[in-house]
Amino acid sequence: MALAPPPWQVSLARLEGALPFLPETLAECLALASLRRLWHAHVQAYPFENIGLEHDAGADSIELTRSWHTQERTAMLSWLTRVGPPVLARGASRALAAKGARRGGDGAWTTADRALARLDTLLPSRDPVATLRTWITALREEDSAFLEGGSELVTFGGRAFSRFAPRGSAWAASLAVAVRPQLLGLGQAPFVLAGLTPRILFRSELDMPLDSLIEQSLTHALDQAARDLTRLHQALRTADRALAGLYASSQAPASWRLIVALGPLTRAELGRALGVTARTASQAATVLQESGLCRLRSGDHALVPIDGSLVPNC
Image 1 (cartoon, rainbow, N blue to C red):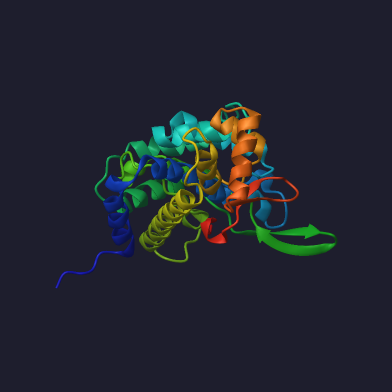
Image 2: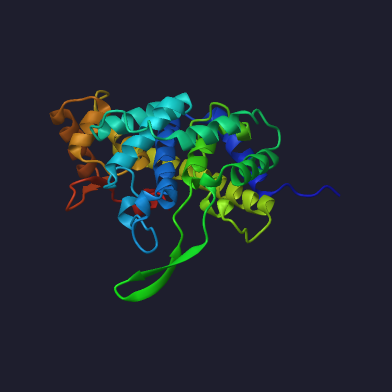
């Protein structure tokens, strides 16, 4: 009797089956949502100068459009516009426009370029697990910059604490593999997989066999992509009902797609992302509020979905 395929292969087959039927608007949303998830994974892995006992960038920094790590965000988005697949590069350019940022800050990302160049020598591939194993093993054994240290003892406030040693460059490997969807035969799919190579794969001592860890990360990354597909499909159907009868020139539907995919945005950010006047963006925001799709959050005055089920679970 034939053995059942691993869970990640089942998830991949489901995503591949959905690709031919994606409308353009949903494909656009998936690309933007990929940026959101990439940033979430990046914040968890990037050293941020190893500040704090746990090197924790903070929960509030996870949201791409609201994070205070502006230089790092600009650097990541700029790098993606340069090396990412076209659909992701376009999304990254739009995210930069929304934040009023110019491309730059990626010149020092030689580590990510190095990881990407090494991965490209192994592509195309028919066996994602074997390819990832070969690539990760080479990075671990031949480039010490990627290794994650164990723990170290530090003194703070007169007390001794054990904390993680300074982070390695697992973040660079994570981004490199994300911009090569052909690893999984996804080709020009309108999304990439975030968190495909988490920091745990680069620890000096692994808790499980490397292949098992790789299969776990594949399953998780594909599951998150499938969740985005379901969530965004629901969001577009919700908007179709709530915004029926609008003039064709209304920017409210496009504004809604940006908010549910890319993240909370202010009126000014909506205007820059859409390339419309401040008045037009404000009118679109008002329509979203009056239709019951969005609310204006106090504090940062960003528009967020009222329905919590339309917010990604990262």
